[in-house]
Amino acid sequence: MDGEACSLAVRTGGAGNPPLVLLHGFPLTSASYDPVREAVEAVRRVITVDLRGFGRSDAPAGPYDMEVLAEDVVRAADLLGVDRFILGGHSMGGYVSFRLAARHPERLAGLVLIDTRAAPDSPEGVERRRAGMAEVRDGRRGAFLERMLPSLVAGDRPEVLEMLRAMAATVPDHVLVGCLDAMARRPDSRRLLRELDVPALVITSTEDQLLLPGEPEEMAAELPRGRLEVIPGAGHCPMLDHPEAFADALIRFLADVEPGQRS
Ligand code: MLT
Image: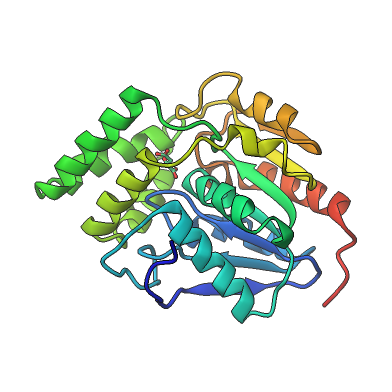
């Protein structure tokens, strides 16, 4: 499934191959990487993408399947002349990364999984998605977002919550509904992990309320070349609430993946 062509907002900076392509979570945008951009671009070429429907990218009517979002990323890499890249996905961006890895394993030079899950939604999780979809369809997106966004923040960090609100404000209702539905329908990627024989980093945060205990450790153990970095005190969005620790973890990993030849 490829979806109709649409225009995506892409930002690149830094130098060194293979580049790092970073995908954001839901209902966020590539601005979630702003606090770490400069540090990571000092060591490697970084490409961030607003997935279709988010930020400054087009928001066609649909569908918003994880496969469609993944194919957009491949098209963007093609247009940039990038063959192999290290793919980093935060939360929903991780679900997209799994689909991209399943469909185009030859494009991956490495994988970074950030506060994300290989497992599908539980039946209760699917119910919560359906309730959220109904709320947005009924014109109550504010109620949905004000319940969801605070759960992405650890502790009392009003400035982080404000950043999340600003990103979510760019996402139209039909995209919220489409992606909630797509996340509820996403396949189980756990068996894929052992086939992903590339250097892989799982980043997890101790205060993330969306992950089940032990899940990140299991993902790192299943990945043939997986390693785990734990960010103490961070919530679901460590690039926003603990940017230094997050950038350090990424930079340590990049140093080991492949020499970052200047491009
Ligand atoms: C995200 O941060 O991308 C979402 O919270 C993921 C999810 O709801 O499963």
